[in-house]
Image (cartoon, rainbow, N blue to C red; front, side, top):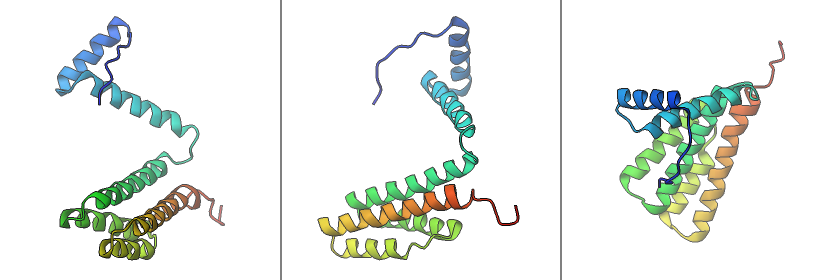
Length: 146
């Protein structure tokens, strides 16, 4: 969805935006979006010790939530493969125990009731909380040697 809004920018900035968009072959809003995202990331780095950890936690959390959301609507083999890949990455790369989540997925797949969906949502939230806890809190704690 695109909002039909207008913003006022200095002529020199408008020219630079148009030139960059033309050079990349993308709409001007894409150039603005990238610039704004980069600005927010740098701004956030003043308040967060490790911006990479925030980005990593956001990525894995989003990937898991999107996969589970897709599972609710579509239990196809492709969806299950994507979900399995996301869970495997969380388990192996982040060393997070996903057994409860995996068991809840199996329960939902065998009987996709509202109750099992609610249980799966809870297991997903728990896993996302563990991702956030591990990447943003535990890894930023000073080690005993420091």
